Length: 165
Ligand code: SF4
Image (cartoon, helix red, strand yellow):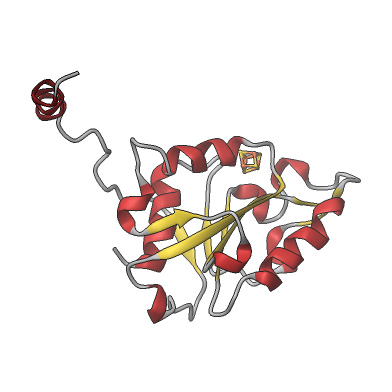
C-alpha cells in the first residue's frame, strides 16, 4: 500500500477511541495518589480467582477503543516494574500467597486497585470452600471499581485517579 493511500485512509477514519466518560469508582478516605505517579503509572494485574469477566473488561480498557495508555497507564509483566497492582476476583486459597508476594514485590509508593464486586464481600462466590476471602481482607485497597463486571470506562476512571490525566 502506498504512503499516500495509507494517509488518506487514516484521514478518512479519524479518531476511533471512545471519549472520556465519568464512571463510578470508590476512593479510600485519605488516599492521595503518589506525586511521582502523576502522568504515568505501570500496572501489574493479578487474577486472584475471578471468573475472567473482569479481565475481559480490563483487556478492553487497554485495547484500541478505550486506550488506557493515552492516560499514562501501561500494563507490565513484573510487579518489580509496577507502581499499581490491580486485582480482580475473590482470593482463592491457592492465590493468597501469590497475591501477597506480588504486592510485596511492588515497590513503594504503590497503589492497589480492586476491580469488580467480587473483591469486596466475595460476591456470588461467598461461602465457597475454595475462597479464602475478598481482596480487602488481605490488602488495603486504595481505589475500588464497582460492577460485575465493571465497564472499561470505570476501570479507566480508576487508573486516571492515579495518573490524574
Ligand atoms: S466481579 Fe463479576 S465479572 Fe468480575 S470476577 Fe467477579 S463475578 Fe466475575
